[in-house]
Image (tube, rainbow, N blue to C red; front, side, top):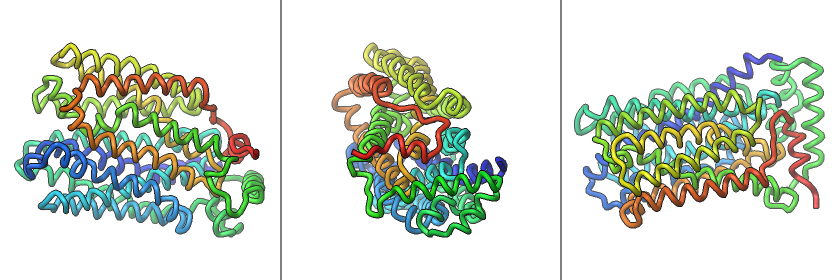
Amino acid sequence: MNNKKILYWSIIVAFAGFLFGFDTVVISGADKQLQQLWGSSDLFHGLVVMSSALWGTVIGAIFGAFPTNILGRKKTLIIIGLLFLVSSIGTAFANDPIFFSVFRFLGGIGIGASTIAAPTYVSEIAPAKDRGKLVALYQFNIVFGILIAFTSNYYLQDIGENAWRWMLGIQAFPSFIYTLLVFGIPESPRWILEYKKDRQKAVAILKQINSDAAVEAEIAAIEKETVQEGKNESIFMAKYRKPLLLAFFIAFFNQLSGINAFLYYAPRIFELAGLEKSASFLSSNGIGIINLIFTMIGISLIDKYGRKTLMYLGSVGYIISLGLVTTAFYFEWKGMAVPLFFFLFIASHAIGQGAVIWVFISELFPNKLRAAGTSFGTSVHWILAALIPSFIPFLFKEIGTTTVFAVFCIMMVFQLLWVFTKMPETKGRTLEELSESLSKKE
């Protein structure tokens, strides 16, 4: 097996995650500056200016399966790179909140579509024994992008009144590089066989990474599953109820931890906890570093100990850290208490949900329905990821930070119960084996 080629292609595709992470978090550095510049109310600022990209991710996640299936995984990834490029240039030159929000929305579409196309592509080229860590490279790139965004914001924050333009516009450079690199990868052989019915081309790609005997065995398994699938099947059929519910709940609990709400408003939250502006930006940088370190740990463990074990670790860490954050705000502890508790929260997310979610969702559905199933799971994720941060400034003001974080903590208790009672282990099994075991006829 040519692991170098698989790794190279996986790294290129996973770089979409870097653009995802950078784009998601870079706005946190411009948060208060943009609200003051345009004189926006808390509700307008949260719903439109800050969350416009998140609303775009909803559209990208809901409809991203169509180009991923019709145009192919590769062409969709190229389009995603172009969306990030246009978005970063447009927001850097925006002069009003509506124009700004439109271009942030386009970048959001790129994020939403990337959460379908990138994990789907990597899961389809990766061998079963390495699939977890290779798909999780996407998550690694997300947190790497988050770290670079926090670092970039920290160094650009004091360059003048147009600091926010530089914060947002600098993303054009990695977007351009990513788009060029994607042109050099092959199309997914599973997509070619499933949608183009081109056995010869699929075999040619697989032979670049496998021996002849392994290629024939893999082609036979894919063709067997293709025969078993109906032409007009849908993920909403009764036989796919189990994978559908699994995709729903892992995405649901991911956002009910409060992760996106926190990443979007980290400097604001730290200022509420009593830190000065510069210290709050520096603490945000610490979050990026912790996120990266524990994501690397999660990636190294996911194929050895499995998805479920990491979810147990993450759930317990969520409950402890969110409980401590809630307590800190309730008793009005000032200084570094809240940032330290959030470091524990980020570590718990990175080793659990962060490492697992994109891997797990991409494993649940059969080949023909993988993009549609992944689209469903990511749509749930992004609808909640748009709704929750949109209302954070308003909720902090109306019900208080203590109540908000207490609710997140309670939801993580429910996640732990779900992992214990419902979540299956998927490590080390081929996509076709998982499809057969999870999608039962009734």
